[in-house]
Image 1 (cartoon, helix red, strand yellow):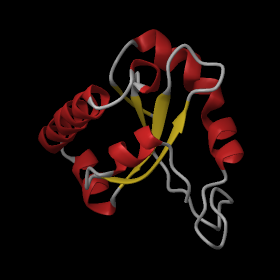
Image 2 (cartoon, one colour; image 1 turned 90 degrees about the vertical axis):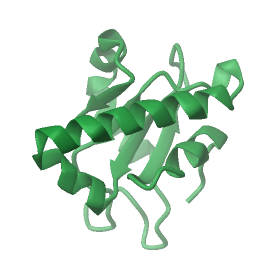
Image 3 (cartoon, helix red, strand yellow; image 1 turned 180 degrees about the vertical axis):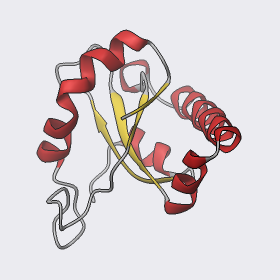
Length: 122
């Protein structure tokens, strides 16, 4: 997979399985992330979900400190589904089909920016 500098840094967190940063024609880039299976299991428990949310926020803050201003990620959008070959989001060689991933979540983008939250869930 090809990642931007920002996406590579976000993916370092073990809770993040995959990440794509989106910034073209946007006020500030954001990142779509798919959680690891372990992190997904924490979504069922409110206390674990809060810890995950705090970990993601702290990680985003650390990542943004290491990026140039124009690269800084405004928020992480945590995707509810996986990106798989079967659903067409990645190729058989595991490259993200960026245009499909981006278009799948495009309808939410305005609301995500309006929420002004560092972490949003789809």
